[in-house]
Image 1 (cartoon, helix red, strand yellow):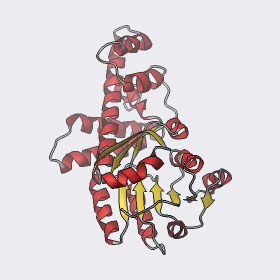
Image 2 (tube, rainbow, N blue to C red):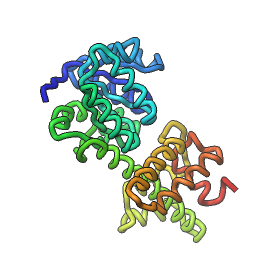
Image 3 (cartoon, helix red, strand yellow):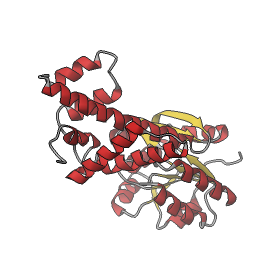
Image 4 (cartoon, helix red, strand yellow):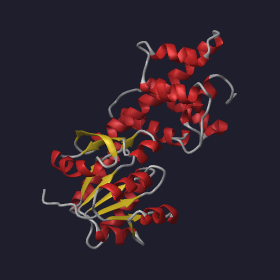
Length: 295
C-alpha cells in the first residue's frame, strides 16, 4: 500500500461521532476536516481545531481518508456516492457505523472500482467511552490496511481488534449487540421472577454477579438500569436496538440459521417501541416483561 495519511476527514458528528472526532482532532497531530448537516457540532469541533467543510465533495477533495459515523448503511451508501464525485476523491473510506454485512461488502466492491479502499470499523461501548477514547472497535480490513489505520483508531478506542476481511468488523459488532440484547431480555425475566419470589432486585443481582451468571451486561445494564428502573433518552435507545437486532436476523438468514432467541428479542424490542419507549434506553424492555406496559 502506498497510501500515506496526511489529512483526515470525518462525517457524522452525532452522539458518538462528535467525541470520536474530537479525540482524533486532539491526538492525531493531523488536520481533521469535518462535515455534518447540523452546524452546532461542526462549530464546537472547529473551536477545538478541526476544519469545517461546506460540503461532502469539498471534504473529500481535501483528505486522504474519511471516517464515517452515520445512522445506517443507507446513509453510508449515500455519503459514499457523493465522496466518489470529489475531485480528487479520498483514497480510503472507513465506516465506523453499524451496517449491514452484505451491503458493506457490496459497497466495498463498488468503491474499489473507483480506486477507493473501504474498511469497516464499527464501535461498541457507551457515549462516555467515546468521550474518553475507550471504545471497542472491530475492524474488517486487510492486514496492511489495519496496520495503517490502527494508530488513528487507537485515538478513539482502547481496544482495537482486527477481525478479518471486509465485513468481519460489522459481523462481530452485530453479534456483540444481539448478544447484549438477548442477555438484557434474560436479565429482565430473571429480575421479574426474583422480585415476585420476594427478592430485592439489587440483592439478587449482587448475588448472581458473584457466581457463574455474572456478566458485563448484568453489572452494567442490570445493576445500573434494570434494578433502579431508569431508562433515559439518548442512551442507546430502543429504536437503535431494533435496527441492530434486525441486522443480526438478516445475518442469520444469510447463513441459513433460524435465530429463535434473537427473533423473540427483536419482537420484544418492537413491542417496547410500540408501547412508547422508542427513544428510551433499550433495557426498558423489562416493562413489557413484567407487564407494566404493552397490555
